[in-house]
Length: 475
Image 1 (cartoon, one colour):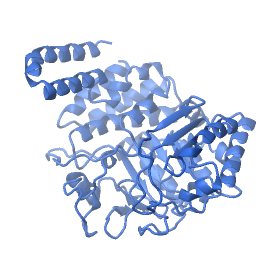
Image 2 (cartoon, one colour):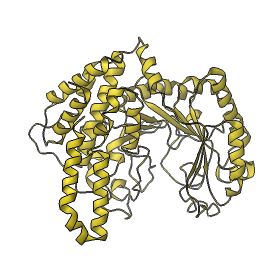
Image 3 (tube, rainbow, N blue to C red):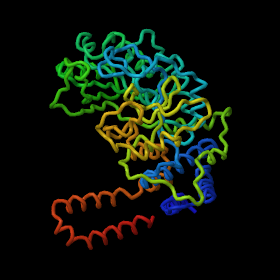
C-alpha cells in the first residue's frame, strides 16, 4: 500500500457521515509507517498527525460542523501585549479604547499551549497587536515552536534599542516582516508614532550582518511599507535602500483605512500591492526535520492521536446554515495574558471576543463560545452589539485571516520535499482537485451570464467532471 492510496481511502472515509476512530487510527499508523522509512520517529509521527488533521478538518469545514474534530492549523500568539509605538488604528493608539492590557507571555504558559495545539498545527504567528521582541524570551519561544515543526512568522517594528539580533538569527525564525513606512524620520513617524527610524535601520543591518556571518539564510526578511498619501513620494528611495541593506523582499502594501482614528492619514487610493523579490523564499522545513531527528530530549508518543476530539457514535452532529468564518475552523489566538480569542481582532466594551483563558491544560477550541460562534457567524453582520453577545454575530470582516487556506497548507506540505508525499498534496488539502474546482467555477460563470448556453452544455460539463475525477484516481 502506498501513501497516495491511503490518502484516497481517507478522503472516501471522511466524506461519510460517520466513521470510526479505530479506522482513522489504523490509517494514521499506515501513514506513519511509510514516512518512518524516510524520517526519524519524531518527524514521522508529527507529520502523520498534521496530515490526518488537515484531512479531517477540510471535511468538517466543508460540512459546516459546529463541534469540529480537527485542531487548528495555525496558532496566533502574542509574546507581548505591549508595544512601544502608538500607530493610528491600533489598540496601542493613544486615542482608541480596546481591552488590551499589557502583559508578557511566560515560557511555561507557551510550552503548555504548544503541548496541546502544536503537534497538529503547521504555522505559528508569534505576533498580533504587541511588539514580539519586547519579550526577551521570544527567541526561546521560537526555538520551542521548531520542536513541533512549526513554520514561525513574526512581524516587528524593530524600533527597539539594543535588540539581540544574534539570538533572533540563532532561533531559526522562518520569516520576519519589518514595518518601515518611510525612509525619513519625519515621514516614518507620522504613522509609526514614537518610532525611531535610525534604530530600525541599524537593527535591520545588524540582523542581515548576523545572517551573513553565521552563514544562515533565515529569517527571510520582508520590508513592509504601508503606502499612504503622506509617504508615497519616498517609495523610490525605499527601493534603493532595500537593495543597499540587503533585505530579501520589499512589499509595498495597501493598508486598511485609519482615518477614523487619525483623519490626517489617508490611504493612497490608486495604489495596489507590489512585491519586489530580491532573493527567492526557500523552505527550512527539511532543516527543522533534521534538527528534530537529532533532538534526544524530545520523544513524541502515538497517544497524541487520541487528543483529537472523539466523534459522537450515534448522535447526528450539529451543522450550521450561517456564513462560514475561516478563523473559527483554522486558527486559535492567545494573547500574552493567556486569553483565548477566536481571531486576530481585539475586544472592547462592545466587542465580546474573549472566549476562554488558557490555564495550562484546557482545550478551548470546542467550548461553548466557539460552538456558538460557528453556529451564528455573521447572522447580524453590520449591526451594533451591546457587548453581551459574541462579536461573531455582528462581524463584517470576511477576509482569509492569517491562514490563507488551502494555500498555506499546500505550501507547508510541499516544503517537506518528499517525492511520495508530493503526489498526494492536493488530495490532502482540497476536497476536490483544483482542476475540477476551476471547471466548476467556469461553469458557474457561464450559467450566470448565459443560462441557456449553460443548460445546453450541462451534459458535456458533467461528462468532463466524471472523466477528470476518474483520471485523477489513476496514478
